[in-house]
Length: 366
Image (spheres, rainbow, N blue to C red):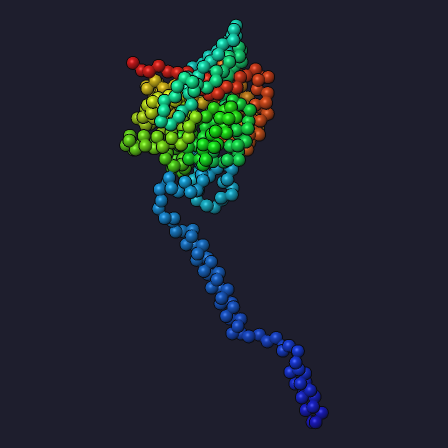
């Protein structure tokens, strides 16, 4: 008995010896506390996520919302999957439209020049003849091709790359893009022509045209207020074309109001022809405004091979009718296709020209 008692006492002394840890023992109350804390955290996280998903954002005007959030570019859709966004652009038609007014490519016996009557637009002052763009020499049998790149200004890196392309190209800047004075000045300094790209009401509400869009069915004065806001966003442009607008360009009263204001400013209108029922040509003829319609969208299919095929169609059309107007966008595939095509355009027998040189002035009605 004495031996057992001594052994138990020795064991107790060892367990209590300084510097030695006590054996780990589970504490049911502590475990329950931490499990409950974790479950509560998960529940709170799911609750916040659900509220953020189902609660609509506070009401705000389209202009304010789009001024703080840049429009969704086609290349950005994958980065925003799962979020409620509206498309940045209407689906581009794949039709090829023959020019209604053609000039056959005939041999010119002596060198002549073509002067465009569309001086760059300036704020608050009527332009004079000294501000006319440089004359474009006629090149005999060379058919003329005008390449318009619109939707510029939002994607600034690609806009800068477009500006570095050899020209002259015609560059159409969105009116709600940032830092327009700097971007458009760079384009002009590079020898390109400028257009103003005005957002017009699309046919679908699933498409977001941007702020200060020209809408159908609103009072004329309200329409003119939006139009003048767009026209005052930068200077140096010679004409206007529509961003989207498959609904608005089919509205005769609205288009006539636009054409009348453009005529006051000595501008011309390029119809992007986003829908076949556009009345832009009739409205321009009614007020005597210089007008052109696009013939080909280069990048309705956003791939290099498809765009290269469209460029070949542009060449065929230009050979057949004497000129062609093509519209493209600042997309990666478009840039990759244009770089080699522009390099050899003169060798293939074509003349790259600014859009204004193929727009004919119209006489005023009456």
